[in-house]
Amino acid sequence: MMSSRSFALGAALTFGAVLCAFPARAANDKELHNMHGTVSYLRGGATTPLAPKASTVLDDDDYAITGADSLAEIGLPDSSRVLVGAQSKVQLKVFDLTNIAHADFVVVGKVRFVVQHPQGARADFTFATATGQVAVRGTEGDIDAEGNDLTVNVYEVCDPNLPVQVTAANGKTFTLVAGQSLAARLVNGVLQTQVQAITQQMIDRFSPDFGVPTSWDAAKGEIVSAASNQASNAVNGATGGYGGEVANAVGGLFAHKKATPSPSPATSSCSH
Image (cartoon, rainbow, N blue to C red; front, side, top):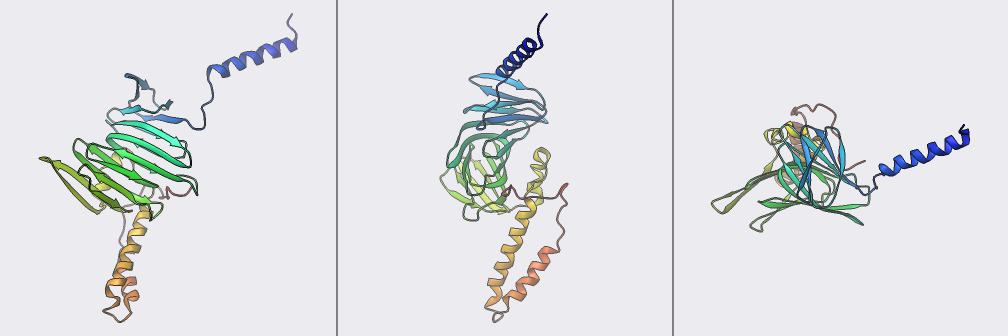
């Protein structure tokens, strides 16, 4: 008869073998999560489906691919996340976590980027599309790259000195701060671009895939503050130094305008 000591030893060896069969993921792993729907990853020419709610480790140069009514998430070691919308294909070309979290993506379709990092750390993310390249340092926003069309919404910028930069295919660079959107389209070989304030319609373009941006309330606060400062500067000379009172009145008009309610309280993607 097997002694209790021998039985315990055998059980320990069996448990150890199980752990070896399913090794723990390293802290620097990049992971692809199937949030819902049809999600797969492409590696070395082979496409592998990912079951709903399942996850897998991504290697550099792997692709995340989604079908109709599907959503995937790429989780990165610096706490940043890239959501991949329906019928999209995103390549993670490289991720390197040193003193700067550096990542390069190639985007066809829709993504939402939430680039965040611990206090004192820095990030340098690039999203390449057929129409332009989007450089992100710390922010939340959306990208829609469909053929020769490109739309970029910026909801939050963690550091005002590090806005989002879009370099168009013609070499022209655009700077986007919180609450701004860029639309670019290649027509007959000519790239047409426009930068404007984000409207609810622009947000609704991405909401079916990703929901309401978590930091949109924070962005609206920055917009109101900027509008108030501009109003103060514009009327200060004409009113003999009473521009502040006028600007406060203008700010009050902005503050009392009802915003479209979010399903949950908005939070900043810069703090965690």
